[in-house]
Length: 172
Image 1 (tube, one colour):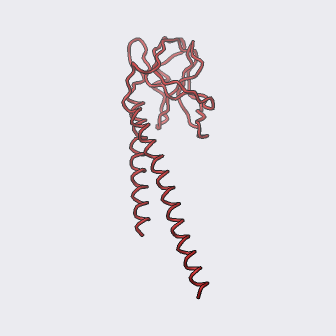
Image 2: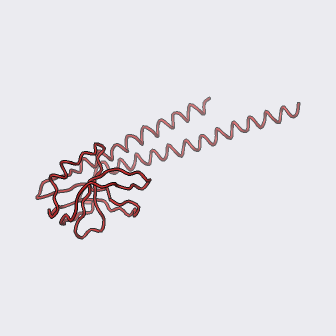
Image 3: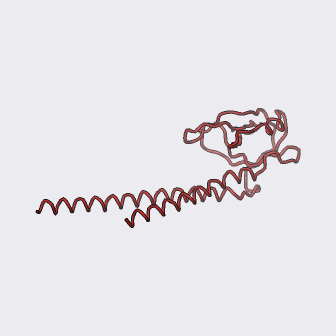
C-alpha cells in the first residue's frame, strides 16, 4: 500500500514537473517570436535620414549565393561599391532580379541607403534599403519594409498561437 502511494506521488510530481517545464519552454518561445515581431516592426517604417548613406561607383554586380547567419543559402542580387568594404544586396522571395540586372551597370554612380552588418559570416549584407541612380529610385525602401513586415506578422501570430496552446495544455 505504501509503495502505491509513493508511486502515485512520483507520477503526480512528474506531471507537475513536465507541466512546469512545458510552460517555461512555451513562454520562452513565445517571447522569442514576440521579439522577432518587434524587429520586424522596427524595420517596417524606416527613416532614410537615420540610415547609412553612400554615393559611390559600382565596381561589380550580379547574382550570388548569400550565406546567411543560420547556414541558409539563397540567391541574392549584389553590388560592390568603391569605398565600401562589404557587398550590399537584396533578397527577393521571387528570385527575379532581371529588372536590377538591366537598370544597374558597372561604372554607374549610385546613392545607397543601408544598414551596416557586423556579422562576418555573411558574405553579402542584404540590408540594402534603397538605391538611387541619377535621382531615380531603382530599389525602393518599401520593398525592404514589406519584406521585414512579414517578420512582424509571423512573430505576432506564432507568439499568440504558442501562448494559446500553452494555456490550453495547462488547463488540461
